Amino acid sequence: MSEIDLQHLVKFIKQRASELGFQQTGITDIDLHQAEITLQMWLDNQLHGEMDWMARHGSKRTHPEELHAGTQRIISVRMNYLPPNAAFIKTLSNPHYGYVSRYALGRDYHKLMRNRLKQLSEYIRQYCKKYHCDVDLRPFVDSAPVMERPLAEKAGLGWTGKNSLIINANAGSWFFLGEIYINLPLPIDKPIKEQCGRCVACMTTCPTGAIIKPYVIDARRCISYLTIELAGSIPEEFRHLMGNRIYGCDDCQLICPWNRFSALTSESDFHPRQALHTPKLLELYRWDEALFLKKTEGSAIRRIGYLRWLRNISVALGNADYDVEIVTALQQRLGYHPMVDEHIIWALAQLHGNKSIKNEHHMKKQRLLRSVKKGLPRDA
Image (cartoon, rainbow, N blue to C red; front, side, top):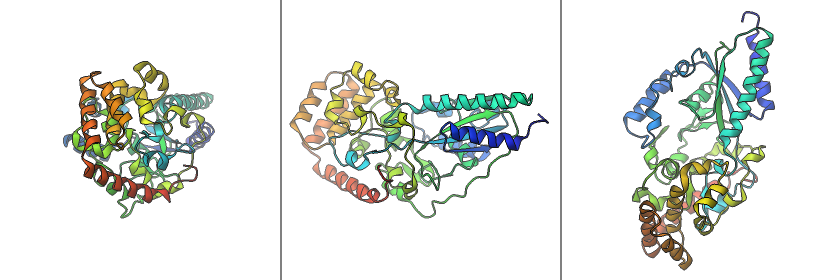
């Protein structure tokens, strides 16, 4: 290793990463002491809900060298995913459409990024081989107990916003993260100073109040958790607040002033699939399980399964304007599964009453849409 120029290797890594489509690359050490304290407090307060995997694997999550022996540095990368014509306003403002979080409109990012990181890893191996340097590395894309956001922050890719997402002054927060664990003592990058200031737009905008204090998310209240991670029934107190969001939620990103600087993705795989782009709820609700699996092949959406899909759409239909066709569609689904039935019965009750709640939610949604409309990137 004495023959290899580590500074030059870092330049080589960042150049190759850029060629592979990553917008930024940073290097950090493996000290996650502060993140470990924060994570444990979050777990102790049961804010992770049913995400038991967050508490598994002992200290491997906060001690990278235990997850992959010999690790000395982490290569952290980011890749933009905001698609052109994201149709935020068009979809959220129409209660008869289903809103899918923008990250899930195209191909599952795990596969694309993992392949790119494997290519980057091979470039590094070949570079080190020329210098007879024994390199050992392993790529990750949200596939193991890796604290990707604290690592990205330490690597200088951005700072942690009050919504817990990594924010970059030049790119906002519409990007994916990935890592390569490596056993070489590469020079590290400096973290960026937090720049949220007094802004609390993400906190006040969250439909369910999931951001209970700056940088702390109560997952049990988060719409992304409720529609994706939660396996059973969605608590009634949150159903009307979900509006037409059937897979994830982007509200805290939509309102963030830094996302005015977001760049659109150049990856065609992240562009919206026609079936999921401004989809009509009733059309989605008519899918049988075979069609659901076909339409979501290669998509992150498939992981929630058909029952949660029906559950989420049932809630969204209950939050739509009263329509005889909607009532009929819901009634026809009764008897498919007890968990879905529970949400259908709730939806039917909503359609026939609770006008004050629906009106209050509608007014809140319109305030959000007016707030974010001016700040959206062009073509978004």
